[in-house]
Amino acid sequence: MPVYQKIVSILRIINYRLERIIPLTTPLSIVLGFLFPFVFINLRPFVPWIFTVITLSGALKLRASELGATIRSPLPIILCFIAAHVFMPVIAMFTSTLFIDNPDVVTGFVLVFSGPPAVSACI
Image 1: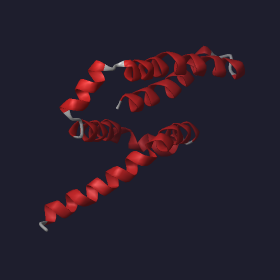
Image 2 (image 1 turned 90 degrees about the horizontal axis):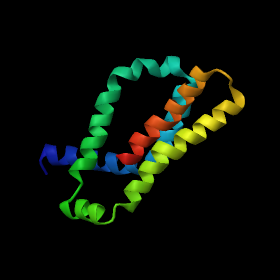
Image 3 (image 1 turned 90 degrees about the vertical axis):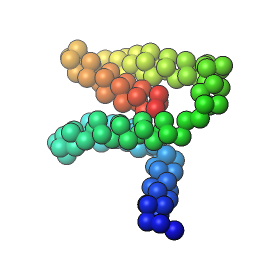
């Protein structure tokens, strides 16, 4: 087996394992980033590259038949969009206003608990 096939095989195994834990890593990453911003701020330049890799790996596995099925039955995508862009921001706003009076901090909570999950859900 050529070297590049071994590398591809290893990368597929890593990708498969990461895909299985992404529902846990996304909320955990948000919480850790909120609690320890001084640790993760140094990773900021890598964020666009990470999203690029995630998006590319998802796009590479997309088949024309899957795209057609999504177009024929768009309800799950629409529900995901509504949950990510309507329900999550509203829940974040109401929850944060229970504990905080500063509108800037409330806005921060809405952005922190809406943006990353919405992007991850759509990917």
